[in-house]
Image (cartoon, rainbow, N blue to C red):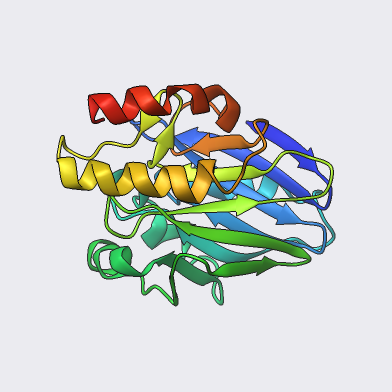
Length: 218
């Protein structure tokens, strides 16, 4: 488990399932929690929640957020959601119906690009990144004195954007959104990218390669 302590926020991360999906748990100082991608292994996710018992006074799971509708990111949602009554379920508007169809879990808040999520005193920005799926979203957290944290799902990884099936239109949409909504908005090169699989990177490490990604088309 990776644990990152930031001003007013603790981020815990584990990898689950056969595709090593990253599950992130954000705990605000006041106790509100947001879980990103209940991907697989519900027992491991419950253990992740238990591990955060001392990250705040009376921590409680307020939000279950799904970055996109692909099966490897939703495998534990049907088990985790009913285990925490009253928890809001969040997903991008264009992916919400597919998530519900696959899991039986209603999405109580359908996210749009530009929305914000209040996690205690922490404000999270919702960033729509269309292309890997129509309704993929990333979540960004900017806190004073520390690098911005961006949770990108499968839309941005070390070395490139997410899979768009070699479809030029889908790639163009995703590349455009990643450039304009991430690289041009969060200009600090130390901004941390936390993807849906694999290790973190930074916007600064990836920025020099944007032209290469655009030229190769993936």
